[in-house]
Amino acid sequence: MPTARASWGGALASKTHDFAGTPVNPPEKSPPVRTPWAPGAPALAAAARAVDEVVSSGRSAETALAAHEGDAHRAAVRAIALGTIRWYLRLAPALDLLLKHPAGVTGTVRSLLTVAAHQIEYSRNSPEATVHAAVDAARLLGAERATGLANAVLRRFVAERGALLGRVDTELPSRTAHPPWIVERIAAAWPQACPAILAANNGHPPMTLRLDL
Image (cartoon, rainbow, N blue to C red):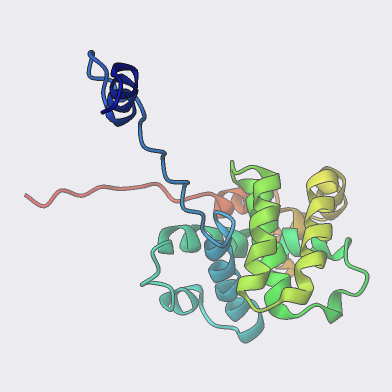
């Protein structure tokens, strides 16, 4: 027959709540589920594919983005891709300054570097987090060998982007991300207003809401 001490100890061991109703031995929480990729990596990879189709294949942005309409992160893909295309002629030359052999970089990897550079320069995301996501995005794109390149180039872009973009911005076409022929035509037609026109062309259009009553 168990002693009173043993019975009391057994009761404590089996007791799940104290007199106040608080669990004595609450169950351990399950560890958070971790995804295999850094946050934002799938969106960067998809945006890089879309940008590459525009730059390398000449497709329209809408056609390139149509393949991602069913993605859970389609809004992010669209915003990143369109923003990158808008500023491609400013960002790509800055990245070229960091590449020893720009012509040897595949179109997809080059587009990935550019979409990541866009996020670093024009979004509120942490630059370090963007670099991490871009490295994982390279893996998602099947470019495992380019992960080291992406990490090194983008880290330098984070550290040196002020100087890099300063070198690019000495020319009006690259500073405003417009083809030279467009800049020349606008400057010929409206010489005084040319910079303002180019700046307005890079702005986001106003949002208009219409109520159908």
